[in-house]
Length: 200
Image 1: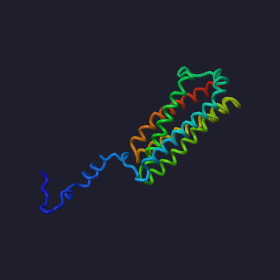
Image 2: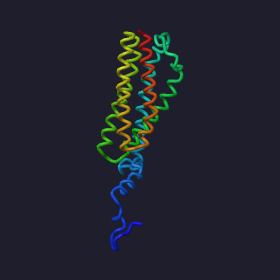
Image 3: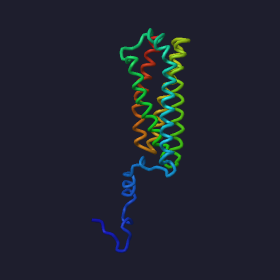
Image 4: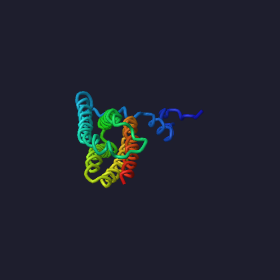
């Protein structure tokens, strides 16, 4: 048993390592800035869900024609899922993405929060850009368009990973919510690469 000097404060005997270990138990994701609660918090969550739905709907509109046209006739690898799978998967992923962004937005101001949200916006923008590049350029110029989409989706993979890392410094829950999105993006990258190779 460690002796404590009479009259000393109880926490004075704690070593820096013990204090750090105790602090690490605190879930940073539970902390919420006072001005980011209640109605305002709900409004931001609804806004993020609406943005995610808009990105998904726009992608669906852009890809609808090509999916029934050149994409249906294009050679695809054996692991390519049925077209009907993509819609439900993206619907779930967009909800997870929106909630992850909301959790970080609610956190107190910090450099990690600011950097994480900047990356979050960047990955959203790149995500929205991939569909017209893949389906639009794929239809217009064929294989070169598919290779351009592959370069873009690799960048998306990197930005999503960077976002996860930054979010982890603010909210472990938010970072975890983005993991399925990253795994699906990696799968999409593999599928994009296979279709580009098969296209010649």
